[in-house]
Every structure is written in C-alpha cells, then in structure tokens.
Image (cartoon, rainbow, N blue to C red; front, side, top):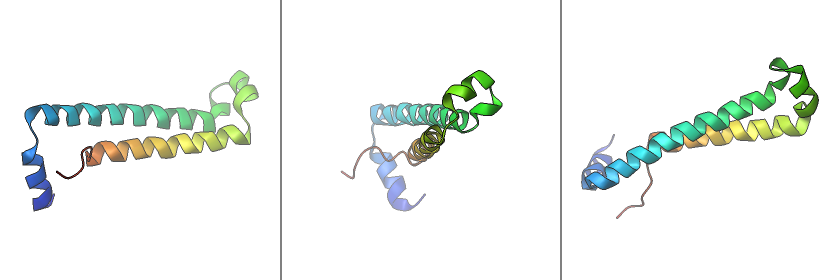
Length: 87
C-alpha cells in the first residue's frame, strides 16, 4: 500500500472500518456464488443429464460466462475495499 492509502485508512472511524469489512465479506461471498453459478451453467452436462437437456444451449453458456466475469468483479471490489470516495 502506498502512503496515501495508509493515510486514507487511518481517517476511517471504527464504524466505517466495520462497514468496509462487512461489505468486503459480502463481496467475496456473492462473487463466489456468481462464479459458482457461471461454472455450473457452462459445465451443466457434467453435473446431470436432466439439467443438461434444459440448460445446455449457447445462451446459457454466454450467461454463465457473464456470471463468472461479474463474480470476478465482486472479488476484485472486495479486495480493493474502495467503497467511499475521497473526502
């Protein structure tokens, strides 16, 4: 971390730090769920033949890819913890 990030972290109150931690944990959890859903939709034929008959088409593969990208974004946002703009 750079010195500006260190100074910015010191400016937050205990309540704001708690909110940042809670949002970060929520971003990791939701990112994991979105990526899991995307992986499921892309590789559905490996899980169940019945589900493959319903969900194994190109549109679902595209949606699965979008889910994985969005899940990765949520993880990135959870790592950066940049929830509030500069004061």
